[in-house]
Amino acid sequence: MRFILKKTILLFSSFSFLFYFLPVLLTVYYFTPKKFRNEILLLFSLVFYAWGGVSLSLILIVSILFNFLFAKQIEKNKSSKKNWLTVGIIFNILVIASFKYLDFFISNINFLKGVLIENAEPIPLLNIILPVGISFFTFQQMSMLWDIYREERKDKITFLNTALYISFFPQLIAGPIVRYNDIIDQLNERKESIAQFRVGIQRFIIGLSKKILLANTCGEIADTIINTDIHFIDSPTAWLGIIAYTFQIYFDFSGYSDMAIGLGKMFGFNILENFNLPYISKSITEFWRRWHISLSSWFKDYVYIPLGGNRKGKSRMYKNLLIVFLLTGFWHGATWSFILWGLFHGLFLVIEKIGLREQLKKLPSILQWFYTIIVVMVGWVLFRIEALPDALHYLSKMFLIDSEGHSNVLSYLNNERILILLLAVIVSSSLSVKITQHKFYKVLRNKVSFQLLLDSSLIVMFIISLIYINSGSYNPFIYFRF
Image (cartoon, rainbow, N blue to C red; front, side, top):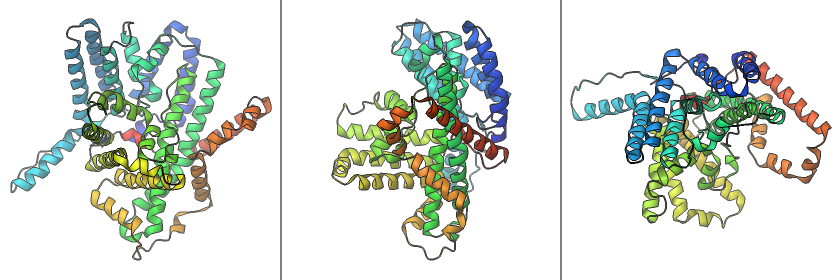
C-alpha cells in the first residue's frame, strides 16, 4: 500500500494553510451573502482535498455522487429502502476495501499459496495509492445512509448538503467522524458570531500547540528509539520510547481534533468532542469512552447494537465486542498488527465485562489507573511496530531486565525534551479540568485582565509553534494514514 506524500497534503500546521488557504477562505466566506456560504465552503473543501492530488479528489466526488443517489433512493422508496441501504453499504465497503485492503488480501493469498503449493507464482501487488482520509469520509457516508434509512429526520436531503457534509475540510481527512444527524441542522441554518469565532481561534491554537510542541517532540524521541536496532536498547530506553509514543499519538490526534473543532467554530459549526482525557482512565472500558469518541460511538451505534449488543445474553455480548474491536483494528490499517491491537483491546473489554472491572473497583484508584495505562501502552507497542516478532521483542525489552542493551536512556533526553515530557504529563492529566472547575478560576475568567492574559499566552504559543514549523522540524500527522 502506498500513501500520499505528506508534503502534498495541506497540513493545518503548514504556512500554506495558515497564511494562504485559511485567510482567503475566511475573507471570501464572510464577504459572501449567507445564502451562498455553503457553496463557498464546498468549493474550498474540494480545493483543500485536491491539494493532495486532483485525480484522487475525483474519487471523493464520485463517492459523494453515488452516496447521494443511494440516499435519495432510500428517502423516496419506502418499500425498498432496506435494499437501497444494503446496496449503499456494500458500495462503501467495496470502495474502502479496494483502496485500503486489496493488497493486504493479495499478500495473504500469496503467503498461503507459498505454504500450500511449491514454487507457486505470486499474484502481483497492485500498489494502489490510498486516498487520504478515505476511512473517515466513507464511515460518514455510511452513517448518513443509516440515519436516512431510520427516518430520524423528515426534511429532504439536498445534493449541496450531502456534498458539504461529506467533504467539509476541517474533519475530512482525519476526523472526528461527524454524524449526519448531528450536523445537518447546522448546514441548513447556523449563526456565526464574534464570540464563537474567538473561541474557534483559541481552540485552533491549543490544538496546533499540542501538535507542534508536544506531539512532534515526543514523536522524535519515540521514532529515534523504536527505529533503533532492538538489540542495542535497554529496558529503561524501551520504556521511554513507548511512553513518548503514547504521548505522541494522543497529542497528534487530539491536537488535530482540536484544530478541526476550532475551524468549525470559525464557520459557525459545533463539532462534537473526540477526546476526553483518555489517559486518566481506570479501566479499558473507560478508556474507550474517552479515546477517539467519534469512532467508538460509530461502531457502537452502527455495528455493536445492530449485532444485538448486550440484549441476547452474555456470550453473544462478548462475541459482539470482539467483532467490533476486530473491525476497529482493521479500520486503522491493513496489517495483522492492527488487527491484533484491536483484538487485544477487545479481549480486555470482555475480561472486564466478565468480572475484572468489579474487582478493579475494590483497588485504590492509583492501581486501577496503573493497570489501564500499562495495558494501553502494551497495545501501543502492537500498534506502532507492525512486524509482530519485532513488537514481541520490544515488549520483552520492556518487561525483562535486559543487560545486553548498550543504550543510555539519558542520551535521548535533553532539557527541552524533559520539559516537554513533563508538560505532556500535566496536559494529559485531569489537572487542567480541576483548575477550570475551581471557584477561583470561575471568578477570574470573567475579568478583562484575565482574558487579555489568556489571549496573550495563546499568541505566544502560536508564535512558538510557527518558529518550530519554520525550522522544518519533524511534523507528521499519524492519523492521516488511516
